[in-house]
Image 1 (cartoon, rainbow, N blue to C red):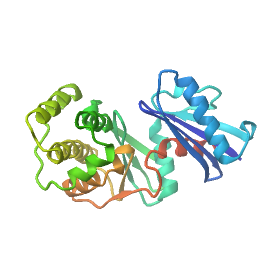
Image 2 (tube, one colour; image 1 turned 60 degrees about the vertical axis):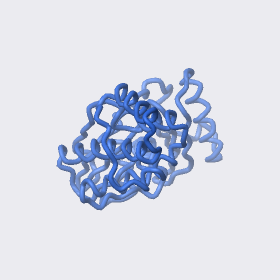
Image 3 (tube, helix red, strand yellow; image 1 turned 135 degrees about the horizontal axis):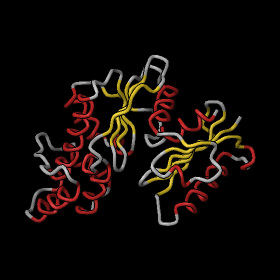
Image 4 (cartoon, rainbow, N blue to C red; image 1 turned 180 degrees about the vertical axis):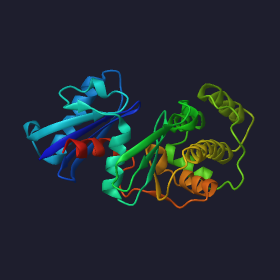
Length: 254
């Protein structure tokens, strides 16, 4: 049976098609004003990638911030159990997943059977997530990946003192205007997010093995700094780190 998982986030639409546990297709698009049309086009691309017609998809589950926008879904589920289901499928040893998305950082605990146990979220401010790095990217006119490359060259970064993304953005602009080096500013931003993530890991008493997912987990500098701050061997999944919500939704639909 073929199933679909729709993960409608605040910044990206992710759609995964699955047969049994095998991924047939995975497509993602930026969220734009006409979200229903973007979802339709992204789904169309996923079907084309899988080489199947829509009628072959027997069930679908939607998750994420904008899940209710998806039409014809079998049901809507929170993203916590979807991420847990995908994590267990990808690595049955994982007991904690830290998902660092565009606006939220979530911690998900799994039991020995891979079932979702509990979920924890940061303060809800985007200064601890990917949106903060997007703001930095625009302020410094560098790519998302360049932020990581610059941050890796700094051994002792300073701190971003503001916890609200609006004020943190002002602080970043002040650093730029004061002539601070690009690598120093990038390192401060990555270090700030890693600190907030480490605090979440400590507060939820996360169990090992622990893995990270979401767009920010792509950054080597973030992984390195977080591992150092937590003194843990933090794992990454051998797939697109933005896949888990949509993949897990499709797996549950099975």
